[in-house]
Image (cartoon, rainbow, N blue to C red):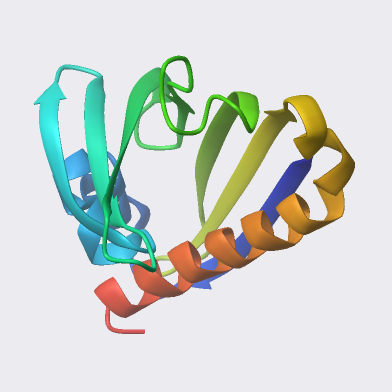
Amino acid sequence: MPRISRARTIPAPRDEIWEVVRDPYHLPRWWPRVERVEEVEGAAWTKVMFSSRGRAVRSDFSRVETEAPRRMLWRQEVDESPFERLLSESTIELVLEPDGDERTRVRLTADQSLRGKTRFGGMMVRRATRRTLDEALRGLQRAFGG
């Protein structure tokens, strides 16, 4: 199961970052390739992204754990989705740790269980996941003027 972790210090207080990351409607501001978020109900939401061919791709998520304003874990609902043939499980953990008064260390960790032939492409999946997490951290930094 590939486990990828990336971190970056963002020039904003933890509470301000928490207000953005806890609300799924803010995902288009900082998460890569997310065009919009739909069907937010409690701890569940749907991200809408577009493929390189311009086709809408929907991906359902649910919040599994929250320790405000420090940690959140969410799961991609892969069953009966376009991702089902690639993944048997996928989670993202976000951890916010103060780094002084006006800075926060943000760590994103992705855990993925690959399915079928995808298991043999683990190196490519790790590379793509690392790129996505780095882009998300850069997006958060841009959202806070860094």
